Image (cartoon, rainbow over all chains, first blue to last red; front, side, top):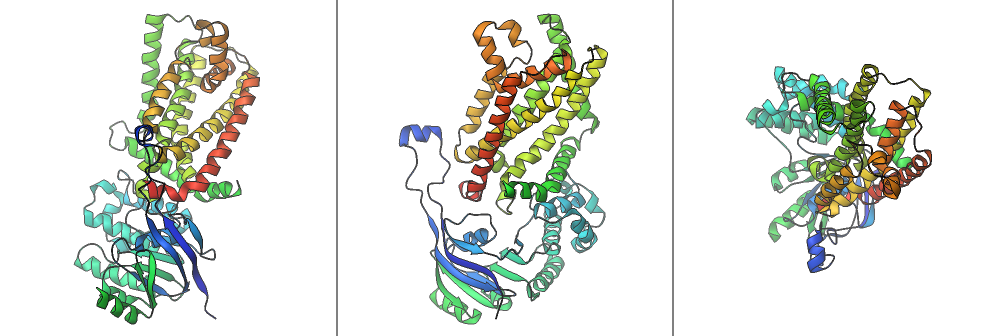
Length: 241
Length: 260
């Protein structure tokens, strides 16, 4: 029997009654603006097995990123629940919590600690991260002196080497110049293909999803339109659009 | 409460490392670098002492240390509250990408401002030698006063962090309220001397910041005791506020990103 890594049951996420309100609005228009309600996910239920690479596709506003953020614990579920069985999870994102006046080396520790890793583990991985980032002596210079490419290289290297059981990827598959793009793409594939790691990828690139994913979820207006074999779902999606 | 303790343990290294990084980055480009952490409070103290000694002739014993204790404690509370009310918004880059318990952000700021407060108290101790204070065991009461002050500040900051996410105007309301509280706290003068009668009594004890500052001055400078009854009252209030603040944040923190 397969090990379930992510169990999502009847998940609802709403952006309702939560908009920040000002005292002026409260005084002149009543306590809350009742029109600002948006039901982003409408009762999603699904299981993702350990080692599976689930691609998520759908139009803008279909709830893809909301689902990713909710699995990552950044958003709260309004109804339903998500069970990760105690597995560690991270949303692959660029430059979490970088202090621009600090050096790249210090920022590696800061980002790693923020992602929940211990300082000793981060220090163990430090040299690998620096080597992969190709920053050389710049690693000890303040991040504010980095070019955009260098910044992305460092950020990618941090997230690629500080691995969690479940990785959530939102359109970030390769960064930097052509050479680094190839390298980061290969590293990403290596990360994803680890059979113990569960991955959720949101992307608009059908060819990327077809190459990487073992299972596909098609979201439409916050509901599951189709889930199953990658090729079948992607073909149906292409025909519908 | 178990989750709170587990979170503090888990993110302890982050809090201290982030506070250290922020402290270093504040002075990274300056010529005098970390010396500013000492020079800045020393200069302010010099200015206040000069102004109040020559122009106001306050007649307060140990005036420089008296003012400096007031400023140090006020600045800690003032800075903490002002940053807490917009803490989630100012950390949008972090909270929208990674889950971090939001009271960890408050604790990180407390570590940062706490370090500066520690330096200021080191200067107070120096002043106690320059303008000799009669040594007394009452000085030790400064420890429970400071502990209670920290708990109270943490509780208030957690509550302001929560409501600051939902109420846009809270930043302005906080600024105005803090200005009012500043004048009602007696940073540069002794409330008990200047305002007599029931109002003076109320201002020193019912205003928690004035009570903490007056108690600290009594312990460190005048060989007296804190306002025990009120210290206990405000400690209990601080524990209650901290409990409420932690519960509020735990219940709502995953919705903050939806708002900002």
